[in-house]
Amino acid sequence: MMQNVNIFFETYAKALEHYDTKGMAALYGIPCTMVSDDITSIFNDATKLEGFFNQGAGFYRQFGIAHVRHETWSRRNWTEKIINVKVNWQYFDVFKNPVYNCDYHYVLKLDKNNQWKIILSVSVNEKEKMEQWLALSGKK
Image (cartoon, rainbow, N blue to C red):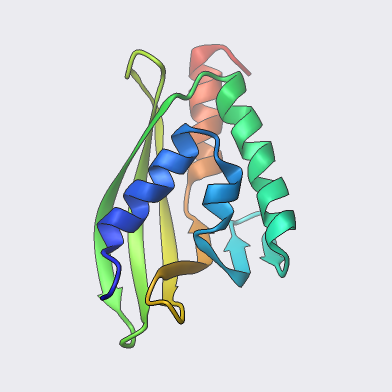
């Protein structure tokens, strides 16, 4: 039975909310690639990927991000086992007030257990949205 994509991203959102970097890393296939305008990072080791997520979790804790929601904007099957998904992430504080939102594209591939794993993550505008929020909130 193929894992549902929305359930996959709900699991990802819960891991983000709980700062569960091991859980987040488990949703990635190794090797995987993360791309933004500024950097391309290739992870061949799950512990290094988890370390990368620890940095992000520290940011979320520091700035009070407590709730995460995703909205799947599009899904395109490239093959039977590879899909491209566009997701809008919405981040909220402890009172569920919006903090910022951003867009990502993911390439997911089914593993040998028919579970989706992220093999490519492309940050479309997170850095810009985060910087904009920090500037407006006076936290920068």
